[in-house]
Length: 490
Image (spheres, rainbow, N blue to C red):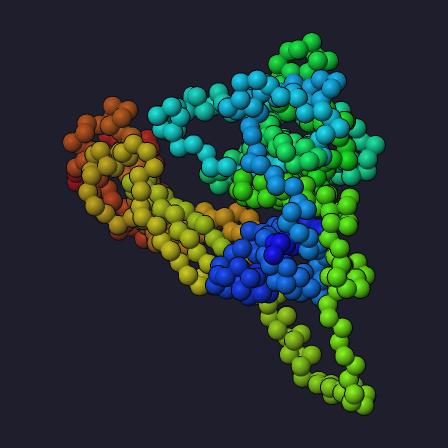
């Protein structure tokens, strides 16, 4: 019995929770594995199934208004694995490429190219370069980034010359750059761009990395340039062969939503588009077995027998006053909680030793729901306190600097709070101590004099409740080390 495949007509997402249980028996796997297969399927919903199972799945899709074809697998071209192009040349006859693992270049005529798929793929970044870890080659990486920026700038100027006679290629009003200008690192992965070229019969599938520089154009006197310059050439000669995502990429704006998470996903999309165009141009490959439904794939569901029971008036559920009120109250509560919820990242420095601490706080209308306090860490070299005194102490601070983020963007911003644990006496004593530590650096006092004076100065200032009285000691600490030492010794 000839196997059949189910191919979607449009690039739409299929709910794995609904169709995972339907696909699992056909594949002979568990429901969980069936959901994973639906999530990875893309436009190729199912392949090489018995005709009865394939038509059952197609009818289920059509019932939910997801248009598809149910075609024999032999009617679809068996595409080979994509072959990487190491050298590319465009001529009047066609596209000439030297393929990886093949000594002689091959020419694919322009009229034999049936699909052009340009896509962005998220690929993991290399942890090592030539056996050296990335952290040890910072200069090399900076140089690589400069070269990538130069490639983007040149590509941007080339893509600005793309023919905009087709409306779908015109950038939106808010887009100031095309998609290649957005190639950047993202979550330890890197966006790479490729141009896949597939022959109309499916016998050839070439992959051109657009960030390499081995492209030669006859019109450019045979000089090798960046592969990205082939993009407008392919578009000019093969406008109608571009996939839907390729055309969307030319619109610019934020195109990260169009990036493929894996190379397998990009390959599957290119295969789906090639098969989709084959079935669209030759609808007889998927002939209906029953009267087709409007807008469907020709696989009409079984007719429903007319019920012999008398038709009655539909039951009208009586209205309920409290349900609408409860719903409104629930929505108001959600908005109230959403507006009042804030995530706060705050930090402070110790007034004595200068160590830094950062906390994470979740707040609801200013009330702290959860606090995660950080450790006191030294932000740089040892402070004067660590060098001269070097004793454990209670860290004192007079407030926090914070950055708050609202759940829905409301109330975000920066600020400072004054809820520290240092009293005014402690704050003035710490300031006097900071001036005391500068005496040794400026040569106004010896190391031993500063170390011996520190505890007496702290106790003296902390014991003065009057702000005017503490002000006198602050002035002595700033201006008169001799007088201060003399008064401390009394």
